[in-house]
Length: 211
Image (cartoon, rainbow, N blue to C red):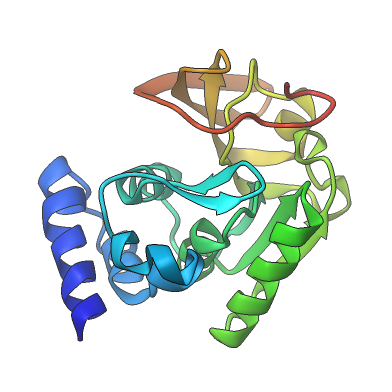
């Protein structure tokens, strides 16, 4: 009951109050037990308006940022989504609620295994996991209707552009190692339409085309 109240408070004061209005995103984040995705000692802080450490120098993103990035993808439920950076698996779970199939790539094997076990226990059967360099994407399963990168990059890796389906959307934090801005790229044939959203700070995208 305590966590149910904390989730409701998160929805009202962090998401809806800041303009998140997509009903499916709100429903997903009101359902998923975010406190399962952090260490037990941090569970009571899981619904706070900030990121939290999950080990190996990585974090679970601030709830608002998860909601914003998910809303920007504008998923209808039928899409195939590529996630770069499985991390705790929380964003993965949100995507699994919103899309038909999720392909999630994580460089760190320990995080991937832990997230995979938790998401399996929670009953998700539409997620595929891979331990690899996320900056190179997951070419074998391409193309993707949407791609989300949950780590900051110096620029958008070209393999991800190539793996994006026509009319697809890609969202990625781009900037320096300390500060980035969310970049949203929509693909229409050979044309890329780029827009920039809010400033943000993510952990570094590691890999050949990251830091």
